[in-house]
Length: 118
Image (cartoon, rainbow, N blue to C red; front, side, top):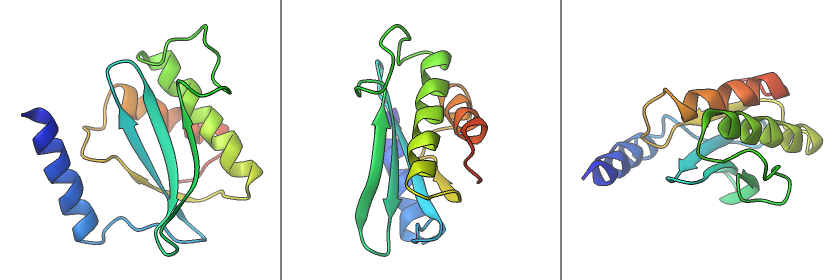
């Protein structure tokens, strides 16, 4: 039931075009499962994914779990490093219908510490 409500909130934001990624300012969206967290940079003008990082990717240190706050912060900082390497500094955050607390908030804080600007 909660997943359906989250998807409905997400579709409402995307339909209203409030969150839109461009070449200069990409859209950073998040997805979280019970065991992992995923960060995705998207260019909506070209309709393509720029890069992704998750707690199950090779860059992620497996000694930190992906389902806790430390893992979320690590994934956020890894995504920031990857984005800066690609020349992306400014992003707009799409929380994908999740509440802005817990792992989502920690993910954003890790990305900010890594050098991304929201």
